[in-house]
Amino acid sequence: MSGPCREVITLQLGHYSNFVGTHWWNLQDASLSYDPEGPLGEIQSDVVFREGHTSGGDVTYTPRLIAMDVKGSLRTLRQEGRLYDAGKDMSAVTWEGSLMMHEESPPEKNSFLEDLDKLDKGEILAGADLSFSSRLQRSAGSASVDTVNSRLAQVQKGYGLEGNVKVWSDFLRIHLHPRTVSVIHQYNHDGEAHRLEAFGQGEALLQGSVLEDLEDKLHFFVEECDYLQGFQVLCDMADGFAGLGSKVTEMLQDSYGDRGILTWGLAPVSHPDSTPMKDIYHMLNCTLATTHLANHSSFFCPLTLRGGLGRRPSAPTAFTHLNYDASLWFHSSAVLALALDALTVPYRLRDNSVPMWQVADALAVSGRKVVAAYGAVPFPMMHGGSLPDALSACPDALPWKPLSACSEPGDGRCYSQWAMLKGFEGQRLTGNQAPGTEPPSPLHSLDHGEDVLTSYIRSFYPTAPLALQLVSSPSKLTPPFPQIFSQSVSPQGFLQDQHPQPGSPASVVSSVPVLTSLQSGPALGTWLSELHRGASAFDIRRVAPSFLSQGPEMGDYEEALEQLRLLARCYRDTSGGAKHSSSEEDDDD
Image (cartoon, rainbow, N blue to C red):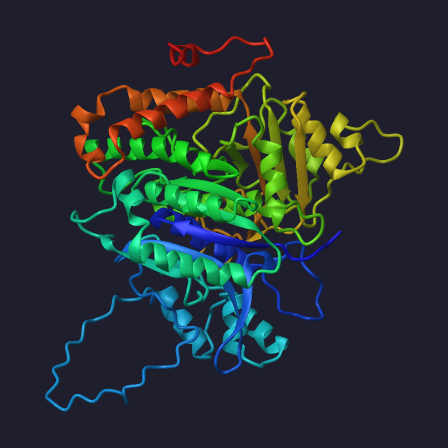
Protein backbone atom coordinates (compact mmCIF):
# COMPACT_ATOMS: atom_id res chain seq x y z
CA MET A 1 0.00 0.00 0.00
CA SER A 2 1.12 3.54 -0.66
CA GLY A 3 1.71 5.96 2.19
CA PRO A 4 3.11 9.44 2.62
CA CYS A 5 6.09 10.37 0.48
CA ARG A 6 9.23 9.69 2.51
CA GLU A 7 11.78 12.14 1.14
CA VAL A 8 15.45 11.39 0.57
CA ILE A 9 18.26 13.94 0.31
CA THR A 10 21.19 12.98 -1.91
CA LEU A 11 24.77 14.13 -1.37
CA GLN A 12 27.43 13.65 -4.06
CA LEU A 13 30.97 14.21 -2.80
CA GLY A 14 33.71 14.17 -5.42
CA HIS A 15 34.18 14.16 -9.17
CA TYR A 16 33.58 10.47 -9.89
CA SER A 17 30.58 10.43 -7.56
CA ASN A 18 29.18 13.30 -9.59
CA PHE A 19 29.79 11.29 -12.77
CA VAL A 20 27.76 8.39 -11.39
CA GLY A 21 25.21 10.75 -9.88
CA THR A 22 24.72 12.63 -13.17
CA HIS A 23 23.92 9.40 -15.01
CA TRP A 24 21.63 8.36 -12.14
CA TRP A 25 19.68 11.64 -12.23
CA ASN A 26 19.44 11.44 -16.02
CA LEU A 27 17.85 7.99 -15.59
CA GLN A 28 15.37 9.37 -13.04
CA ASP A 29 14.50 12.29 -15.31
CA ALA A 30 13.82 9.94 -18.23
CA SER A 31 11.11 8.20 -16.19
CA LEU A 32 9.28 11.33 -15.00
CA SER A 33 5.70 11.86 -16.12
CA TYR A 34 3.69 15.08 -15.87
CA ASP A 35 0.41 13.75 -17.24
CA PRO A 36 -2.12 14.34 -14.43
CA GLU A 37 -4.54 11.97 -16.13
CA GLY A 38 -2.00 9.22 -16.72
CA PRO A 39 -1.28 6.21 -14.52
CA LEU A 40 1.04 6.62 -11.56
CA GLY A 41 4.41 4.95 -12.02
CA GLU A 42 5.86 2.34 -9.70
CA ILE A 43 8.64 4.70 -8.63
CA GLN A 44 7.62 7.74 -6.58
CA SER A 45 9.76 10.52 -8.03
CA ASP A 46 8.89 12.93 -5.22
CA VAL A 47 11.12 10.88 -2.93
CA VAL A 48 14.23 12.38 -4.56
CA PHE A 49 12.81 15.33 -6.55
CA ARG A 50 11.32 18.56 -5.21
CA GLU A 51 8.78 20.86 -6.82
CA GLY A 52 9.28 24.63 -6.93
CA HIS A 53 8.38 27.73 -8.91
CA THR A 54 10.37 30.35 -10.74
CA SER A 55 9.76 34.06 -10.21
CA GLY A 56 7.57 33.90 -13.32
CA GLY A 57 5.38 31.21 -11.82
CA ASP A 58 6.69 28.29 -13.90
CA VAL A 59 6.71 24.93 -12.15
CA THR A 60 10.17 23.43 -11.62
CA TYR A 61 11.18 19.90 -10.65
CA THR A 62 14.74 19.62 -9.39
CA PRO A 63 16.75 17.01 -7.48
CA ARG A 64 16.85 17.25 -3.71
CA LEU A 65 20.62 17.22 -4.05
CA ILE A 66 23.86 18.68 -2.69
CA ALA A 67 26.82 18.14 -5.05
CA MET A 68 30.32 19.06 -3.89
CA ASP A 69 33.34 19.30 -6.18
CA VAL A 70 36.54 21.32 -6.58
CA LYS A 71 37.35 24.43 -8.60
CA GLY A 72 37.39 23.87 -12.37
CA SER A 73 35.04 20.87 -12.29
CA LEU A 74 31.95 22.63 -13.68
CA ARG A 75 33.21 24.04 -17.01
CA THR A 76 30.05 25.36 -18.74
CA LEU A 77 27.73 24.80 -15.76
CA ARG A 78 27.07 27.85 -13.59
CA GLN A 79 27.28 27.09 -9.89
CA GLU A 80 23.93 28.77 -9.20
CA GLY A 81 22.39 27.26 -12.34
CA ARG A 82 20.11 29.03 -14.80
CA LEU A 83 16.72 27.90 -13.60
CA TYR A 84 15.93 30.98 -11.50
CA ASP A 85 18.16 33.41 -13.39
CA ALA A 86 16.49 36.78 -13.60
CA GLY A 87 19.38 38.45 -15.35
CA LYS A 88 21.93 40.83 -13.90
CA ASP A 89 20.83 44.36 -13.10
CA MET A 90 23.66 46.81 -13.80
CA SER A 91 21.69 49.90 -12.69
CA ALA A 92 23.32 49.85 -9.27
CA VAL A 93 26.80 50.50 -10.72
CA THR A 94 27.70 54.13 -9.81
CA TRP A 95 31.39 54.25 -10.79
CA GLU A 96 31.88 57.18 -13.19
CA GLY A 97 35.51 56.61 -14.08
CA SER A 98 36.80 54.68 -17.06
CA LEU A 99 36.24 50.92 -17.16
CA MET A 100 38.27 48.28 -18.93
CA MET A 101 36.41 45.06 -19.66
CA HIS A 102 38.29 41.76 -19.93
CA GLU A 103 36.20 39.06 -21.55
CA GLU A 104 37.27 35.44 -21.23
CA SER A 105 36.06 32.98 -23.81
CA PRO A 106 33.77 30.40 -22.17
CA PRO A 107 34.52 26.70 -22.60
CA GLU A 108 33.12 25.30 -25.83
CA LYS A 109 29.93 23.28 -25.43
CA ASN A 110 29.49 19.89 -27.02
CA SER A 111 26.59 19.20 -29.39
CA PHE A 112 24.46 17.79 -26.61
CA LEU A 113 24.75 20.93 -24.45
CA GLU A 114 24.09 23.10 -27.50
CA ASP A 115 20.84 21.23 -28.06
CA LEU A 116 19.95 21.75 -24.40
CA ASP A 117 20.25 25.50 -24.91
CA LYS A 118 17.95 25.28 -27.94
CA LEU A 119 15.45 23.34 -25.90
CA ASP A 120 15.45 25.96 -23.14
CA LYS A 121 14.81 28.65 -25.76
CA GLY A 122 11.81 26.74 -27.09
CA GLU A 123 13.38 25.95 -30.44
CA ILE A 124 12.39 22.78 -32.27
CA LEU A 125 15.30 20.38 -32.39
CA ALA A 126 15.48 18.83 -35.82
CA GLY A 127 16.19 15.13 -35.47
CA ALA A 128 16.45 15.00 -31.68
CA ASP A 129 14.51 13.03 -29.08
CA LEU A 130 16.05 14.21 -25.84
CA SER A 131 13.13 13.30 -23.57
CA PHE A 132 13.97 15.91 -20.94
CA SER A 133 10.94 15.48 -18.71
CA SER A 134 11.89 17.94 -15.95
CA ARG A 135 13.53 20.37 -18.36
CA LEU A 136 10.53 20.42 -20.67
CA GLN A 137 8.20 20.99 -17.74
CA ARG A 138 9.93 24.30 -17.15
CA SER A 139 10.46 25.29 -20.79
CA ALA A 140 6.88 24.40 -21.70
CA GLY A 141 5.49 26.72 -19.03
CA SER A 142 1.72 26.45 -19.19
CA ALA A 143 1.76 24.45 -22.42
CA SER A 144 -0.45 21.39 -22.58
CA VAL A 145 0.84 17.88 -21.99
CA ASP A 146 0.18 17.17 -25.69
CA THR A 147 2.59 19.99 -26.62
CA VAL A 148 5.29 18.54 -24.39
CA ASN A 149 4.73 15.03 -25.73
CA SER A 150 4.98 16.28 -29.30
CA ARG A 151 8.48 17.51 -28.57
CA LEU A 152 9.35 14.17 -27.01
CA ALA A 153 8.18 12.32 -30.12
CA GLN A 154 10.85 13.73 -32.42
CA VAL A 155 13.36 11.46 -34.11
CA GLN A 156 16.05 10.18 -31.80
CA LYS A 157 19.48 11.68 -32.01
CA GLY A 158 22.64 9.99 -30.82
CA TYR A 159 25.61 11.78 -29.31
CA GLY A 160 29.10 10.36 -29.47
CA LEU A 161 30.40 12.13 -26.38
CA GLU A 162 33.16 9.68 -25.52
CA GLY A 163 35.84 12.15 -26.67
CA ASN A 164 34.03 15.25 -25.46
CA VAL A 165 33.22 14.53 -21.82
CA LYS A 166 35.76 16.19 -19.55
CA VAL A 167 33.57 16.77 -16.49
CA TRP A 168 30.20 15.48 -15.31
CA SER A 169 28.30 18.61 -16.31
CA ASP A 170 29.15 17.84 -19.96
CA PHE A 171 26.31 15.27 -19.99
CA LEU A 172 23.95 16.65 -17.35
CA ARG A 173 20.39 16.68 -18.78
CA ILE A 174 18.50 18.49 -16.04
CA HIS A 175 18.38 21.83 -14.28
CA LEU A 176 19.76 21.96 -10.74
CA HIS A 177 18.50 24.05 -7.84
CA PRO A 178 20.67 27.10 -7.02
CA ARG A 179 21.49 25.55 -3.63
CA THR A 180 22.70 22.26 -5.09
CA VAL A 181 26.28 22.86 -6.25
CA SER A 182 29.04 23.61 -3.76
CA VAL A 183 32.51 24.39 -5.12
CA ILE A 184 35.59 23.92 -2.93
CA HIS A 185 37.88 26.70 -4.09
CA GLN A 186 40.93 25.59 -2.09
CA TYR A 187 41.65 22.76 -4.54
CA ASN A 188 41.82 22.45 -8.34
CA HIS A 189 40.39 19.89 -10.71
CA ASP A 190 43.08 20.35 -13.38
CA GLY A 191 46.85 20.64 -13.06
CA GLU A 192 49.30 19.21 -10.58
CA ALA A 193 49.12 21.97 -7.97
CA HIS A 194 46.56 22.08 -5.15
CA ARG A 195 44.87 18.76 -5.79
CA LEU A 196 42.64 17.12 -3.17
CA GLU A 197 44.58 13.87 -3.01
CA ALA A 198 44.84 12.75 0.62
CA PHE A 199 42.31 11.71 3.25
CA GLY A 200 43.59 14.24 5.79
CA GLN A 201 43.14 17.12 3.35
CA GLY A 202 39.46 16.26 3.02
CA GLU A 203 38.98 15.87 6.77
CA ALA A 204 40.40 19.35 7.36
CA LEU A 205 38.01 20.95 4.84
CA LEU A 206 34.80 20.68 6.85
CA GLN A 207 35.18 23.88 8.81
CA GLY A 208 34.72 27.60 8.23
CA SER A 209 32.97 28.60 5.00
CA VAL A 210 32.77 25.04 3.62
CA LEU A 211 30.97 23.85 6.76
CA GLU A 212 28.67 26.88 6.83
CA ASP A 213 27.75 26.41 3.18
CA LEU A 214 26.98 22.71 3.67
CA GLU A 215 24.90 23.35 6.79
CA ASP A 216 22.95 26.08 4.99
CA LYS A 217 22.15 23.79 2.06
CA LEU A 218 21.24 20.89 4.35
CA HIS A 219 18.89 23.00 6.44
CA PHE A 220 17.18 24.29 3.30
CA PHE A 221 16.42 20.82 1.94
CA VAL A 222 15.64 19.24 5.32
CA GLU A 223 13.20 21.90 6.44
CA GLU A 224 11.01 21.53 3.36
CA CYS A 225 10.65 17.76 3.92
CA ASP A 226 7.53 16.44 5.66
CA TYR A 227 8.67 12.83 6.16
CA LEU A 228 12.45 12.75 5.70
CA GLN A 229 13.55 9.12 5.72
CA GLY A 230 17.24 9.79 5.30
CA PHE A 231 20.23 10.47 3.10
CA GLN A 232 21.88 8.63 0.25
CA VAL A 233 25.55 9.64 0.07
CA LEU A 234 27.73 9.05 -2.97
CA CYS A 235 31.34 9.62 -1.96
CA ASP A 236 34.66 9.24 -3.78
CA MET A 237 36.85 6.70 -1.97
CA ALA A 238 40.19 7.07 -3.73
CA ASP A 239 41.01 10.76 -3.18
CA GLY A 240 40.68 13.43 -0.52
CA PHE A 241 36.90 13.41 -0.75
CA ALA A 242 37.10 10.21 1.30
CA GLY A 243 38.17 12.35 4.26
CA LEU A 244 35.53 14.98 3.56
CA GLY A 245 32.89 12.25 3.29
CA SER A 246 34.01 10.87 6.64
CA LYS A 247 33.32 14.21 8.31
CA VAL A 248 30.07 14.80 6.38
CA THR A 249 28.61 11.41 7.35
CA GLU A 250 29.75 11.95 10.94
CA MET A 251 27.88 15.26 10.95
CA LEU A 252 24.78 13.59 9.50
CA GLN A 253 24.98 10.88 12.14
CA ASP A 254 25.26 13.46 14.94
CA SER A 255 22.40 15.65 13.64
CA TYR A 256 20.07 13.08 12.03
CA GLY A 257 21.00 9.83 13.71
CA ASP A 258 17.40 8.63 13.70
CA ARG A 259 17.32 8.72 9.89
CA GLY A 260 18.84 6.33 7.40
CA ILE A 261 22.31 7.11 6.04
CA LEU A 262 23.13 4.82 3.12
CA THR A 263 26.63 5.54 1.82
CA TRP A 264 27.91 4.35 -1.54
CA GLY A 265 31.70 4.59 -1.91
CA LEU A 266 32.68 5.23 -5.54
CA ALA A 267 36.01 4.45 -7.19
CA PRO A 268 36.85 4.56 -10.93
CA VAL A 269 38.69 1.72 -12.62
CA SER A 270 41.67 3.98 -13.31
CA HIS A 271 42.88 7.55 -12.92
CA PRO A 272 44.23 9.29 -16.04
CA ASP A 273 47.24 10.87 -14.31
CA SER A 274 48.16 8.09 -11.90
CA THR A 275 51.70 7.37 -10.66
CA PRO A 276 53.04 4.67 -8.31
CA MET A 277 52.89 7.12 -5.40
CA LYS A 278 49.36 8.18 -6.29
CA ASP A 279 48.38 4.51 -6.45
CA ILE A 280 49.52 4.21 -2.82
CA TYR A 281 47.47 7.27 -1.95
CA HIS A 282 44.42 5.77 -3.66
CA MET A 283 44.74 2.53 -1.68
CA LEU A 284 45.22 4.34 1.64
CA ASN A 285 42.25 6.62 0.96
CA CYS A 286 40.05 3.61 0.17
CA THR A 287 41.22 1.88 3.34
CA LEU A 288 40.44 4.82 5.61
CA ALA A 289 37.19 5.54 3.76
CA THR A 290 35.93 2.01 4.39
CA THR A 291 36.56 2.26 8.13
CA HIS A 292 35.20 5.76 8.70
CA LEU A 293 32.25 5.71 6.29
CA ALA A 294 31.09 2.37 7.70
CA ASN A 295 31.29 3.78 11.25
CA HIS A 296 29.12 6.79 10.42
CA SER A 297 26.53 5.18 8.10
CA SER A 298 23.58 2.84 8.42
CA PHE A 299 25.46 0.76 5.90
CA PHE A 300 28.39 1.33 3.58
CA CYS A 301 28.63 -0.22 0.12
CA PRO A 302 31.66 0.28 -2.16
CA LEU A 303 30.75 0.58 -5.84
CA THR A 304 33.47 0.10 -8.42
CA LEU A 305 34.27 -1.93 -11.53
CA ARG A 306 37.91 -2.27 -10.48
CA GLY A 307 39.17 -5.78 -9.90
CA GLY A 308 40.26 -4.73 -6.39
CA LEU A 309 41.09 -1.66 -4.33
CA GLY A 310 44.76 -2.51 -3.88
CA ARG A 311 47.70 -1.31 -5.95
CA ARG A 312 47.61 -4.33 -8.26
CA PRO A 313 43.96 -5.06 -9.03
CA SER A 314 42.84 -7.81 -11.34
CA ALA A 315 40.98 -7.08 -14.58
CA PRO A 316 37.90 -4.85 -14.40
CA THR A 317 34.49 -6.45 -14.11
CA ALA A 318 33.32 -7.74 -17.48
CA PHE A 319 29.68 -8.13 -18.50
CA THR A 320 28.61 -10.57 -21.19
CA HIS A 321 26.39 -8.12 -23.04
CA LEU A 322 28.28 -4.86 -22.51
CA ASN A 323 31.13 -3.38 -24.56
CA TYR A 324 32.17 -0.58 -22.23
CA ASP A 325 35.59 1.08 -22.07
CA ALA A 326 36.70 0.70 -18.45
CA SER A 327 39.20 3.54 -18.79
CA LEU A 328 36.44 6.06 -19.61
CA TRP A 329 34.72 7.50 -16.55
CA PHE A 330 31.78 8.32 -18.83
CA HIS A 331 31.32 4.58 -19.49
CA SER A 332 32.10 2.99 -16.12
CA SER A 333 29.94 5.51 -14.26
CA ALA A 334 27.04 4.72 -16.62
CA VAL A 335 27.22 1.01 -15.71
CA LEU A 336 27.31 1.80 -11.98
CA ALA A 337 24.41 4.25 -12.34
CA LEU A 338 22.26 1.54 -13.95
CA ALA A 339 23.02 -0.75 -11.03
CA LEU A 340 22.37 2.03 -8.51
CA ASP A 341 19.02 2.73 -10.16
CA ALA A 342 17.95 -0.79 -9.15
CA LEU A 343 19.78 -0.90 -5.80
CA THR A 344 17.93 2.20 -4.56
CA VAL A 345 14.45 1.08 -5.66
CA PRO A 346 13.24 -0.39 -2.31
CA TYR A 347 12.93 3.00 -0.59
CA ARG A 348 11.67 4.84 -3.70
CA LEU A 349 8.61 2.72 -4.49
CA ARG A 350 5.15 4.24 -4.55
CA ASP A 351 3.54 1.09 -3.11
CA ASN A 352 5.10 -1.29 -0.59
CA SER A 353 8.10 0.98 -0.12
CA VAL A 354 10.68 -0.18 2.41
CA PRO A 355 12.24 2.71 4.37
CA MET A 356 16.00 3.16 4.39
CA TRP A 357 16.43 2.12 7.99
CA GLN A 358 14.63 -1.17 7.38
CA VAL A 359 16.84 -1.99 4.38
CA ALA A 360 19.93 -1.22 6.50
CA ASP A 361 18.68 -3.25 9.48
CA ALA A 362 18.11 -6.26 7.24
CA LEU A 363 21.69 -6.18 5.93
CA ALA A 364 23.91 -4.57 8.60
CA VAL A 365 23.54 -7.08 11.44
CA SER A 366 25.89 -7.57 14.42
CA GLY A 367 28.19 -4.70 13.46
CA ARG A 368 28.58 -5.85 9.85
CA LYS A 369 27.89 -2.45 8.27
CA VAL A 370 29.84 -3.06 5.03
CA VAL A 371 27.81 -4.73 2.28
CA ALA A 372 28.76 -5.83 -1.24
CA ALA A 373 26.81 -5.21 -4.43
CA TYR A 374 26.40 -7.46 -7.45
CA GLY A 375 24.58 -6.83 -10.69
CA ALA A 376 23.49 -8.33 -14.00
CA VAL A 377 23.63 -5.37 -16.40
CA PRO A 378 21.58 -6.05 -18.41
CA PHE A 379 19.66 -9.00 -16.98
CA PRO A 380 19.93 -11.72 -19.68
CA MET A 381 16.25 -12.26 -20.54
CA MET A 382 15.21 -13.23 -24.06
CA HIS A 383 12.73 -11.01 -25.85
CA GLY A 384 9.39 -12.79 -25.62
CA GLY A 385 10.77 -15.22 -23.04
CA SER A 386 9.99 -15.72 -19.38
CA LEU A 387 11.74 -15.33 -16.04
CA PRO A 388 11.99 -19.13 -15.54
CA ASP A 389 13.56 -19.41 -19.01
CA ALA A 390 16.16 -16.74 -18.18
CA LEU A 391 17.11 -18.21 -14.81
CA SER A 392 17.14 -21.81 -16.03
CA ALA A 393 19.74 -20.75 -18.60
CA CYS A 394 22.11 -19.98 -15.67
CA PRO A 395 22.04 -23.24 -13.67
CA ASP A 396 25.63 -23.25 -12.44
CA ALA A 397 26.28 -19.61 -11.57
CA LEU A 398 24.21 -16.56 -10.78
CA PRO A 399 24.05 -14.08 -13.69
CA TRP A 400 25.31 -11.10 -11.69
CA LYS A 401 28.89 -9.80 -11.48
CA PRO A 402 30.79 -8.05 -8.65
CA LEU A 403 30.15 -4.31 -8.29
CA SER A 404 32.21 -3.88 -5.09
CA ALA A 405 35.51 -5.55 -6.05
CA CYS A 406 34.41 -8.43 -3.81
CA SER A 407 34.19 -11.86 -5.40
CA GLU A 408 31.01 -13.75 -4.71
CA PRO A 409 31.43 -16.81 -2.47
CA GLY A 410 31.08 -20.17 -4.15
CA ASP A 411 30.08 -22.06 -1.01
CA GLY A 412 26.61 -20.60 -0.44
CA ARG A 413 27.54 -18.78 2.78
CA CYS A 414 25.71 -15.50 3.18
CA TYR A 415 24.34 -13.77 6.28
CA SER A 416 21.67 -11.71 4.51
CA GLN A 417 20.74 -10.64 1.00
CA TRP A 418 18.45 -8.13 -0.73
CA ALA A 419 17.73 -8.76 -4.42
CA MET A 420 15.95 -6.49 -6.91
CA LEU A 421 14.77 -7.30 -10.44
CA LYS A 422 13.83 -4.18 -12.37
CA GLY A 423 12.57 -3.95 -15.94
CA PHE A 424 10.76 -7.14 -17.00
CA GLU A 425 7.95 -5.08 -18.55
CA GLY A 426 6.08 -7.05 -21.22
CA GLN A 427 7.72 -10.36 -20.32
CA ARG A 428 6.25 -13.35 -18.51
CA LEU A 429 7.27 -14.00 -14.91
CA THR A 430 6.10 -17.62 -14.90
CA GLY A 431 5.99 -20.56 -17.29
CA ASN A 432 2.99 -21.01 -19.57
CA GLN A 433 3.15 -24.67 -20.49
CA ALA A 434 -0.08 -26.32 -21.55
CA PRO A 435 -2.09 -28.21 -18.91
CA GLY A 436 -0.80 -31.73 -18.46
CA THR A 437 2.59 -30.84 -19.94
CA GLU A 438 5.70 -31.54 -17.89
CA PRO A 439 7.40 -28.21 -16.99
CA PRO A 440 10.92 -27.88 -18.42
CA SER A 441 12.28 -27.08 -14.93
CA PRO A 442 10.98 -26.76 -11.36
CA LEU A 443 11.02 -22.96 -11.81
CA HIS A 444 8.45 -23.22 -14.60
CA SER A 445 5.95 -24.86 -12.23
CA LEU A 446 5.79 -21.92 -9.80
CA ASP A 447 2.85 -19.53 -9.87
CA HIS A 448 4.42 -16.16 -9.01
CA GLY A 449 7.48 -14.24 -10.17
CA GLU A 450 8.62 -13.67 -6.58
CA ASP A 451 8.51 -17.43 -5.98
CA VAL A 452 10.52 -18.07 -9.15
CA LEU A 453 13.31 -15.68 -8.21
CA THR A 454 13.31 -16.79 -4.56
CA SER A 455 13.58 -20.46 -5.50
CA TYR A 456 16.43 -19.74 -7.92
CA ILE A 457 18.49 -17.65 -5.46
CA ARG A 458 17.90 -20.16 -2.66
CA SER A 459 19.40 -22.89 -4.82
CA PHE A 460 22.70 -21.02 -4.36
CA TYR A 461 22.09 -19.62 -0.85
CA PRO A 462 19.81 -22.16 0.85
CA THR A 463 19.95 -20.77 4.41
CA ALA A 464 20.53 -17.02 4.02
CA PRO A 465 17.73 -14.60 4.93
CA LEU A 466 16.46 -13.15 1.64
CA ALA A 467 14.39 -10.11 0.79
CA LEU A 468 13.52 -9.39 -2.83
CA GLN A 469 11.37 -7.08 -4.91
CA LEU A 470 10.27 -7.07 -8.53
CA VAL A 471 9.48 -3.88 -10.45
CA SER A 472 8.25 -4.09 -14.04
CA SER A 473 9.37 -0.65 -15.28
CA PRO A 474 12.88 -0.69 -16.78
CA SER A 475 15.66 1.85 -16.59
CA LYS A 476 14.94 4.18 -19.51
CA LEU A 477 17.94 5.31 -21.53
CA THR A 478 17.85 8.61 -23.36
CA PRO A 479 20.62 10.70 -24.91
CA PRO A 480 23.40 11.11 -24.03
CA PHE A 481 23.60 7.71 -22.26
CA PRO A 482 26.44 5.83 -24.00
CA GLN A 483 25.46 2.97 -26.29
CA ILE A 484 27.70 0.37 -24.64
CA PHE A 485 25.56 -2.67 -25.39
CA SER A 486 26.49 -5.63 -27.57
CA GLN A 487 24.57 -6.46 -30.74
CA SER A 488 22.81 -9.28 -28.88
CA VAL A 489 20.73 -6.68 -26.98
CA SER A 490 17.45 -5.52 -28.52
CA PRO A 491 16.20 -1.90 -28.37
CA GLN A 492 14.13 -2.88 -25.31
CA GLY A 493 17.19 -4.29 -23.56
CA PHE A 494 16.28 -7.95 -23.91
CA LEU A 495 18.38 -10.54 -25.72
CA GLN A 496 17.50 -11.25 -29.33
CA ASP A 497 17.96 -14.39 -31.41
CA GLN A 498 18.91 -12.60 -34.62
CA HIS A 499 21.83 -10.21 -34.55
CA PRO A 500 22.04 -7.32 -37.02
CA GLN A 501 23.78 -8.06 -40.29
CA PRO A 502 27.48 -7.13 -40.41
CA GLY A 503 27.85 -3.51 -41.45
CA SER A 504 24.27 -2.58 -40.51
CA PRO A 505 23.83 0.17 -37.92
CA ALA A 506 23.51 -1.07 -34.37
CA SER A 507 20.08 -0.69 -32.81
CA VAL A 508 19.73 2.02 -30.17
CA VAL A 509 18.94 0.52 -26.77
CA SER A 510 16.27 2.63 -25.06
CA SER A 511 15.69 0.63 -21.88
CA VAL A 512 17.25 -2.26 -19.97
CA PRO A 513 16.28 -4.78 -17.29
CA VAL A 514 18.70 -5.03 -14.35
CA LEU A 515 19.07 -7.60 -11.56
CA THR A 516 21.02 -6.55 -8.46
CA SER A 517 21.89 -7.96 -5.07
CA LEU A 518 23.17 -6.48 -1.82
CA GLN A 519 24.90 -9.07 0.36
CA SER A 520 26.52 -9.45 3.73
CA GLY A 521 28.62 -12.58 4.13
CA PRO A 522 32.01 -14.14 4.93
CA ALA A 523 33.39 -13.09 1.53
CA LEU A 524 33.46 -9.51 2.84
CA GLY A 525 35.67 -10.64 5.71
CA THR A 526 38.27 -11.84 3.23
CA TRP A 527 37.90 -8.63 1.21
CA LEU A 528 38.35 -6.40 4.29
CA SER A 529 41.34 -8.48 5.46
CA GLU A 530 43.03 -8.03 2.09
CA LEU A 531 42.42 -4.28 2.29
CA HIS A 532 43.94 -4.23 5.78
CA ARG A 533 46.90 -6.33 4.74
CA GLY A 534 47.65 -4.07 1.76
CA ALA A 535 47.74 -0.93 3.92
CA SER A 536 49.80 -2.66 6.63
CA ALA A 537 52.40 -4.06 4.23
CA PHE A 538 54.67 -1.00 4.40
CA ASP A 539 55.79 1.72 6.79
CA ILE A 540 53.71 4.72 5.78
CA ARG A 541 56.14 7.13 7.52
CA ARG A 542 58.92 5.96 5.24
CA VAL A 543 57.08 5.20 1.98
CA ALA A 544 54.44 7.95 1.93
CA PRO A 545 55.21 10.47 4.69
CA SER A 546 53.40 13.29 2.87
CA PHE A 547 50.13 11.40 3.17
CA LEU A 548 50.05 12.16 6.90
CA SER A 549 51.30 15.74 6.58
CA GLN A 550 47.77 17.18 6.94
CA GLY A 551 46.37 14.38 9.07
CA PRO A 552 45.39 11.99 10.34
CA GLU A 553 47.89 11.65 13.18
CA MET A 554 49.90 8.43 13.17
CA GLY A 555 48.00 7.18 16.19
CA ASP A 556 44.64 7.83 14.52
CA TYR A 557 45.86 6.08 11.38
CA GLU A 558 46.93 2.99 13.34
CA GLU A 559 43.61 3.01 15.21
CA ALA A 560 41.73 3.08 11.90
CA LEU A 561 43.68 0.04 10.68
CA GLU A 562 42.89 -1.79 13.90
CA GLN A 563 39.19 -0.99 13.49
CA LEU A 564 39.37 -2.37 9.96
CA ARG A 565 40.94 -5.59 11.24
CA LEU A 566 38.22 -5.99 13.85
CA LEU A 567 35.55 -5.22 11.26
CA ALA A 568 36.87 -8.03 9.07
CA ARG A 569 36.56 -10.45 12.01
CA CYS A 570 32.83 -9.61 12.31
CA TYR A 571 32.29 -11.41 9.01
CA ARG A 572 33.74 -14.72 10.09
CA ASP A 573 31.47 -17.71 9.81
CA THR A 574 31.30 -18.99 13.40
CA SER A 575 28.94 -21.84 12.58
CA GLY A 576 31.85 -24.26 12.47
CA GLY A 577 30.92 -25.38 8.99
CA ALA A 578 34.00 -23.96 7.31
CA LYS A 579 37.55 -23.08 8.17
CA HIS A 580 38.80 -19.53 8.12
CA SER A 581 41.00 -18.47 5.27
CA SER A 582 44.72 -18.17 5.92
CA SER A 583 44.63 -14.43 5.28
CA GLU A 584 41.98 -13.97 7.99
CA GLU A 585 43.99 -16.07 10.45
CA ASP A 586 47.14 -14.10 9.73
CA ASP A 587 45.40 -10.86 10.67
CA ASP A 588 44.80 -12.23 14.17
CA ASP A 589 48.51 -12.60 14.89
